[in-house]
Amino acid sequence: MSVAVVTGASRGIGFAIAQRFVADGIKVVITGRNAEALEAAAKELGGPDTAIGVAGKGDDPEHRAAVVAAASARFGPITALVNNIGINPAYGPLEDLDLDAARKMVEVNLLGTLGWVQEALRGGLAGAGGSIVNISSVSGVRPAPGIGFYGVTKAALINLTEQLAVELAPEVRVNAVAPAVVKTKFATALYEGREAEVSAKYPLRRLGVPEDVSGAVAFLCSPDAAWITGQTLVIDGGVTLTGAVQ
Image (tube, rainbow, N blue to C red; front, top):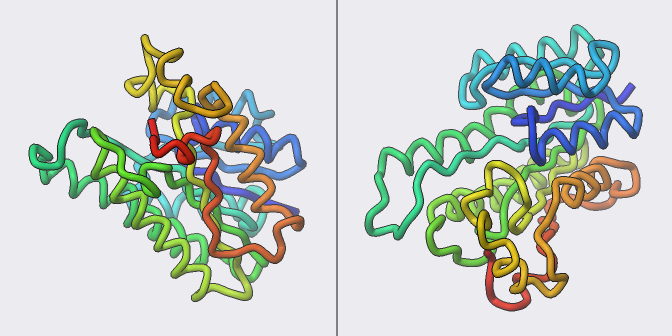
């Protein structure tokens, strides 16, 4: 049986990934901070025979351990981990960046992801021939004024993906995806009220939707990607070809 843990999955990209996994016959455990939203999401995914939710903070080691334990108890060993947790509490130039906000981004976006990987490995991911996909961002590939330090953490996540791919091979494959602006609540500040203006910068003339990301993640976790590891798939409607990221 295939079992996936998807973090930050009560809505948006994480929820779309969980939906795709369920459609592909994979059991899922989803996480998020809001217990009520998580319960509703798990119910929409099909309920306890298909999906369960475990609420908590992604940078909390006890929460991570509880999630992995719940997955194993309910469905069996984890075979896939999707690290979708990420925060961006600061907007503006780096010269004005609140360093406490920067430290929190490192804790959640980078160290939290590594913590999830470590916990999944302790929970048997390697023995299951596992796959890990980290959700990075085009802001980790190109400079992104206004969300610069968020991009710094996402660039570090790409390097972490490559390091893990080397260290964990051949038992576990590790890849990343780097989306541009996807229409979710998390990204509304980047396009709300000016979607036509923002999307005009994209060669494909539209912003992303969560399903654009979920299909790529499902591929990277599937046997079709069995010879792919350490790669970052940019999912951007072509916008990085223009030199822009948002």
